Image (cartoon, rainbow, N blue to C red):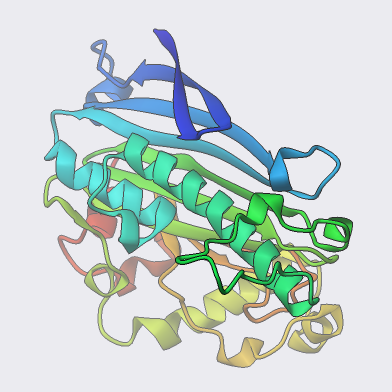
Length: 304
């Protein structure tokens, strides 16, 4: 089913979003019997707002591609949606429904951009001087002097998520965020999330592994970095832009599926920011002795 609707974010801004609904219901085969009984929805939003509503001025551009649950027979839907909202937009939005959180986030993004532009103009000496004879003088930033607006930066932000695994009572997903506030460098970050539908709680690293797992995983992480970067020594990794690899530890930024655990090390994490984020897949067979008995990971490892 496909629906279209419009969100009014500002008096001058209408955003179109397409909702694509897909169901994970079973049809009788083994794979679908293992699938979680969730209904997922997708919201796509692209919004651009120019300063003072003039397309000749700089602008803020935000794009969201959000997948989230709208139905669940496996967990409390409010709890699950709150987890998704927090993962996507932060704890400040956790008490909002996802569609409300999207609207609020886009509105705040636009307002923050206008505020940054006003601060820029004030620092540049372009702010309009309040009339001391007018009580409660309020500056209208959209009508201030924008003669040097082209000196201010355009902003860009993108947030999306991808479902990595959605079976056996576990849903793993990754949130990707990138933004640029002017200049050549963009911020990029991937955050991984694993939720136990039966316990209605996120899965933590400590509950997966036996004590001492962090140092035990170090050699596996190093070996994986060497292999996927096509080098044979840590010194060669350092020549590529890595640092502190000898002290690398699991960073709690992981995904689970029925094959193994995937760690993501973001740009600037044990590496120069110019390098891509590192995704390290560790098969359960390599770490079976490290897994706690009856943990989510050990049960996935034992699947046939």
